[in-house]
Length: 609
Image: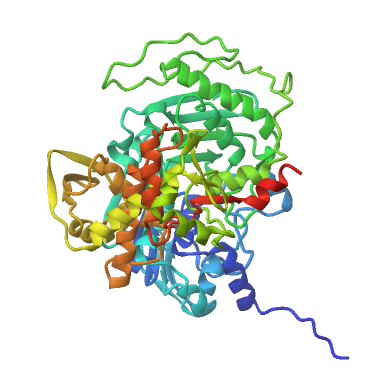
């Protein structure tokens, strides 16, 4: 029997590694910028063409590389960051695996120019799918200038599954925001071809305000706590500025972005009685801990980080957040054991000063630790953190329940509407049918009714616009600009009038004439977010335009529909039931959620056996 086990060629191994490290153009930018930061750069420029498909260029003024180092940098597991395994527990750099550059060059064409300060001439290196084509001396500036061309050109399946330009640009801008926020002392700029963002070095708060402009002005509460276990600094948002969609939530540890659902839960828990369940606070928090107490080597992207003392950091984090909310009059009373004197709310227009929360340095987190703090439900926390605990996007089974077609026919007759309707838990409409008991979700039913009405209005043709006496201003964040510009023509056809004001500000001067009692800003924001993660370039084809109109109708329906907890009169319930069953398909909402459920006679009889 011949031997069948053999080593994979490096080029194949690099392509496999690239599948984990490089997921899309934004991943390339993350890795290259982090390398520039590790090289001591104080000025980093990023240039994008065709949403990163054609070109990604990163130019820095770091220490550069010698010709030998430039060649070695693209070898697998070659790194200047660590020398032995023990170095993993004292990391002060972003990179350390030695996988990023070989993974990038395995799925693209690379041209790099680099020169260290002590050398008068630099080196130019050309690599095509891991194969070095040339290396020569060249005159260039100090630092590194790296061009990544035609990403995934040799992996057509991966290139095929890249999403539309506006989606990829949105992901690039989000990654740029994360990188710029962490490295606020570095000048960073990005040019996407249509838009340029240039951020000067400054304080952490200044970088936040530069990134998100006026959308966070005066809404931030500072946090500063220093204990022997952890130092936490940064900002949280006031409860009244919690967001229903797209909350800005950033956690940073030792200069590295991280996702941490356990700490996220600690922060949001402090807002439980202050904000509604469908909103989320914004926060920008930095953690400084002993590098030996964290493990960053658990995922190729290095964004998932494990803390040795995460259960002990929890009460410190909660105390700091509650203290900050209390100091700035954001809550009526705070229940925690800290010597904090509450102060009156700030006058309008006055920026908060930077206080220090008085947590003693000898605070012992190991004494009196609440027994309820457990991470045994880590998977549930992480799932809720990444995908949300609630929402309309969760698909239910689309199989019709037994007897539902008969119920639909019955309720389309006049006699069925004579049945008495009752409301249960201010959430469900309960009525009877010949086959059993019918439970109707009142909000979903109303969303379905309004969706059909709005969609019929919109698709009937170009709508007339109703001018607003006082225009509504809307802030479009940099990561949302591409999606907004993509849908603007279709919004205009439906009756919206939106005019450019400044770099991120637009004015809504008119709304569709049929749109009543709806917040125009909220509708536009919801529309942007509903298409932000879509892989369709809206407006390019009739099919895509129809899909956009359906999304708009659904957004408007959700904004106008009755909410859970709203009491309904008998007439209102009968109106909803009658309208619902007059529709062609009353069983499901436009995105597949079940609207009603039939408890048939056999099931009801079984309850009394």
